[in-house]
Length: 233
Length: 224
Image 1 (tube, rainbow over the protein chains, first blue to last red):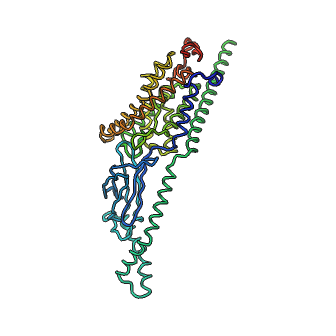
Image 2 (image 1 turned 60 degrees about the horizontal axis):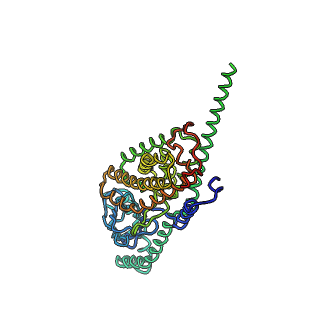
């Protein structure tokens, strides 16, 4: 209370805290974190990297790792922080972006997101088996639907696939956009997080001060009692 | 300034966590109950400080404020920064949970070093100009020290030293300038209104009674 009971004299007493408060209030609430976003378009994995706040991360090495840790690709983000990689194998792609200064981000493209006509990963049994079992199951409706009018040929199936891809392309793009928005929303630092954190820190300090103070008071009471006993003796 | 998970090797993570735990133990050792609220307050300042961004060219870096925390708290910076960094990791995904110890060690050690280098001059009554100078030096030193520590940590887990060190320090030169300004102003402000915040021993030792009461804020020293 002593701070406010006196008349303010210099700008430092009033001006500095005011400027600091303005500084805090004016700066958009955001954290500094490397984010990676990727989605599948056809057989391509496309995406971009950005720091929270929206700054794109340019010319940074990006590695694509398979489920067995094998490197499937190695590229750099372009001048806009974007990248584009043509998948050749239908397996989990782990995208790892490392800026080299302690910032690192990962993003997983699952095998199921990639088109089923890509070859599965060879020697790894599990994912390959999954890819093989899911592939015919998915391909099934195509030929059977085509079979009704008259004999499903190989060419027809290919046509159907291409048609479906063209039809579903915009939808895929749209879903990609939604995932992007959801990620951006999740990564945002919100005011209630900030207030909650400050409250938690001050609350923890308050409780520990209370506990420590009580313990000390108890100890001094015991000490007084001991002294009293000594005196009595 | 915050290291993400998956970068440091296991031995480096374990070693820096052990160092951080030792620092926390040293900070909590004989921490007086009267100082605990101050520790909490400085932890909150550090927690929020990282959200203030300083534009650096096309990118941006954020304030660290570990120099300020160190100046006020001394060894108690370790528990304060641990609490603040834990909450930053949980709420903002800001630095990893596994390498929390490394982040604490990298930021709290320069804070304590700044306390011994510059804070000791603030323990006796000083003018506001001196306060500003020491605060500014501690603020810049905190960021610089953390940058060097981080580069060393990255180097120890098998990376290069010079490239990340140069990148981190280059990105943080404007931050160092702003931190110097903010820390210096904060110290001179506190010297003006609440000198006992800085004058009381903050390294965990209880104040000696023969020191007498701290000079009130209205002494001629503060008017000058």
